[in-house]
Length: 387
Image (cartoon, rainbow, N blue to C red; front, side):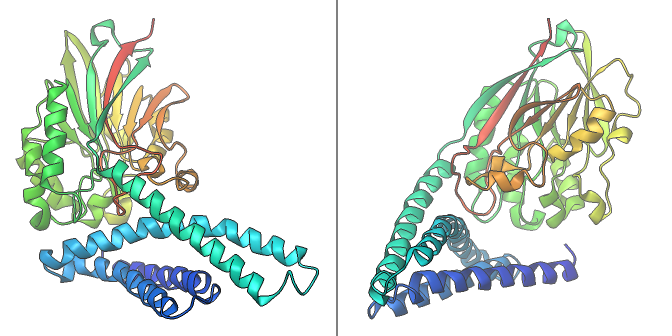
C-alpha cells in the first residue's frame, strides 16, 4: 500500500475510532453518572482501549515483534468486543426514544429514573458484549474443523467424479496467527489425502521478511495433482509480487490469470486462477477470460478466485465451478448482513446461472480473534458428475 493510501486509511480509522469511543464514553460513563471512582476508571479504559487500535496499526511497521504482537492482541480483541458492544447499545437507543415519548409526568422523566435507565442499558450491554466476546474467541481459537461439500457439475466427466479439492482460504498469518496454527492446517489437510489443494488468497497480513518463518510449514502440503494459490486483496497490502515469488519456493504453484490442465483417471479438467478482483489498483488485473484463453470450450473448468464477485465474469466465461473466500461468512454476527452489500454471495454453495460457486467462511480470521455464528473451515470439495 502506498504511503498516501496508508495515511488516508489511518485518518479514516482514527476518525471512526474517535467517534465510536466518544459515543461509548457518553453512553457508558457520562449518561449513567457512575459514582467515584468508576467514572474515571471507565473514562481511562475507553481512552486506552481506543488508542490501542491506531497504535497497533502503526506498530505493524514501527514496533519490534516483542511489542507488536501483544499490542495487536489487545487491539484486535477490543475491536471485536467494540463491535458487539456497539450492536448491543443500539437497542438501548430505541428504549430511550420510547421512554422520551412515553414520559408524560415529572416522575417518569426524573433525573433518577433517567440515571437508572442509563445504568441498566450500560450494564446489560457491557455484560452481554463481554460474554459474547469470550464465546466468539473460543470459537475462533479452537481447532479448525473439516467441512465436506459435494458439488454436482453437469459437464464433469464420469472419470472425474469423486475428485477432491481441499480449500484453504483467508488464513491471515500475522500478529495473532502464527506458525503453530499453520502446522495444524498442513497436518489436517494432508490427512485428507487430497487430489488438489487450493489456497484462495488472503494467506498473510505482513511482509515476506516478517512472516516467512510462519508460512514455512506450507512447504509440507501434499496433493496428488499439486498445491495452487491465487492472490487475495491482503496480499496486495503486504507486497504481492514478493509473496508470489516466495510461495513458489515452497512448491506452491501460483495461478496468475492462467490455467493448468489436470489429468485424473484419464480425464481432463482445467484449473484456472485469477488475481484478486481489486488487483487493478496495484498494477495487476483480474482476467478470467485471459486465464482460460487456451482452454478448449468443452473441457470442465474450475476457477480459483478470491472474491465471490468474480462469479459474474466466471459465468460469462463458461466456468463450471468457482471456489472463493474473502467474506469470512461475516465472521462476527450480524456483520454478515453488511457483507451482502459488497458481495453477491457470503457463504456456502450457490448456483449463478450455469456456474456453481462455493464461498468458504475462511480458515483463519482477520483482525479480532473471534467468530460468532460463523465457524472456520477447511473445506473438502468433492466433485460429482450429474446423473
